[in-house]
Image: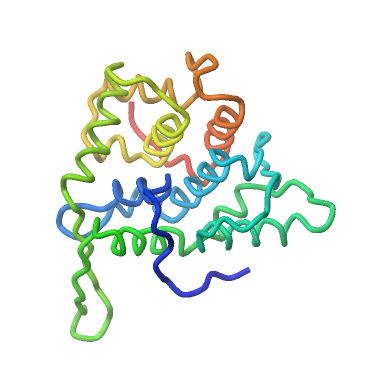
Length: 225
């Protein structure tokens, strides 16, 4: 199932892929290309589906649990795509291939942020012909997200399901290196990303999603110590 045009996605507070997309955006209007934004944002979509009990994850596969309309266009498209792949027997869908097919995920959630006023879009053209728009993040909102992650990284904020998944995505995409976390902070975030020492604080669905994110090679672009 192909993606439709980029439209205003929903009016409720930001979902996990929106938060990750905001962290991907730089102050100069560009974004971190090396963080594999489409695949990472698509993985965040799966994380949001898990948080909402719409899917279950086991190893490298995802199984649909609830296909009812969510009222969120991006989510309904994702559910429909997964349902088509799963077929009538609701077979588990191999996650890596699905993620790689979500080539418009980052652009979709970037537009969500524009609609919410959290990115300012500046229309530009390269050589006067090719689209080369810039997207400038609202610094307070992006800063608040970074503050949450830094507090998690120094054990000053409890980790819930959302923060565990956001941490894993920031770690697995390599964003934590680009966002300036020091070695000790990276070590702590890695521990969370690998579902260590979380106990029962995040639930089995989130733990399975953390394991799935870890298991998908397309998401793992981390380099360095």
